[in-house]
Length: 229
Image (cartoon, rainbow, N blue to C red; front, side):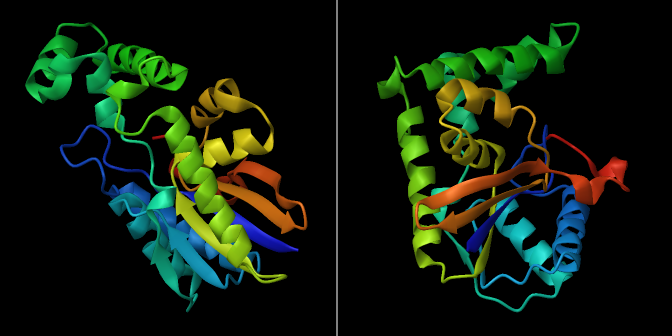
């Protein structure tokens, strides 16, 4: 069978003005997972990433660390959903970062307050009742990701391996779909997927089959590298 290895990008710059960049820890994580995959004997025929900077940079770092000399391409089908518009569709005033920071600064636990608010905004997006408020409704996001998976699966020759670098939402949707779990399962999965975790599918006559999800065994000896965001 052929194989698709999905790798979540390394830690991005959470809380920074330019979130879509790897942190220094994220670059270390990316190099570490590349070396770990090579040590396992993974020799991909191609490496694919989403088009977001954190995904592209993770793919470059892990490929270099693994010592692979293979074609690497970016495919927007593997991009993450747009976090900002989901939040501002729920609370339009937060188009201004100044307003959002001022609101959060008035709380005792600003990070917790943000997480709770963002969870509500995500639930609104996922429910689909206000699809017209979003450039990419949740259903469209899911179709896009599965189209990307189908394209990779169809392009793989027998016994070939593709490494795909994507994000928590996209990888979790592939997993939830493989489990026939839908949006409720997706919501739970994406909360636990770790940076540079490995999710594996095999591709046979019936299409992709899930084998592993959120494997972080390559970080067992490096607990300081384990992050969720």
